[in-house]
Every structure is written in C-alpha cells, then in structure tokens.
Length: 102
Image 1: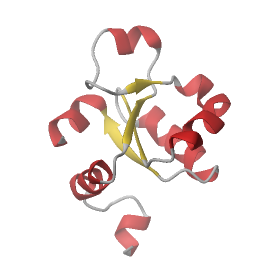
Image 2: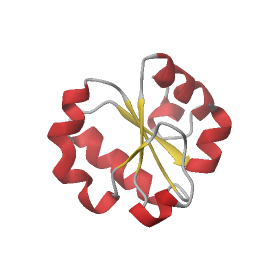
Image 3: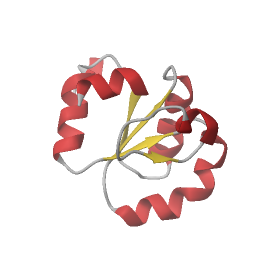
C-alpha cells in the first residue's frame, strides 16, 4: 500500500472495486430515518451510534466492509472503529457518491 493510500488519498474507485470484487458488504451508518429516505440497494443499515455493539456480528460475516453515510464524516468514524477491531474496511464516503462507483 502506498503512502497516499495510507493517508486516505488513494484512488477510492479502485479500492471500492477491489472490495466489491472480494464480496464486500456495504454498511450505511446513517440513522434509520435517513436510510429509509434512500440508500444503496442491498446495503445494510447500522447507525454509527450502535456500530460498536455490532462488531461481533460484522466479524461473523467474514467479508470486507465498505461504510458510507450522507457526507463521509460518520463513515470515517465507523471505518476507524471497524479497522481498530480487525475488520477489513474502507470509507466509501457519501452513499450517493459510492453508488455512482458501483
């Protein structure tokens, strides 16, 4: 992994494609209400406020994870939480932007 990727400035489109090719699960960390107003088809809704309590469940999936939200801020926090708990994860940013890369 190059320095730019480690700092979060890598080519996110390539990262997303690689993760999807490896069977990634997309987790939308917005609130239930936000998720209900629109989301990526097939994504799972686990709000940021409860994601820490779902670590064991997410680990059981045994798949890489892409997190998204409205703007990329909450998903950045979720990405950090998941990575700290040994889950292979990337921040997909806003769900609209991520959806356009799929």
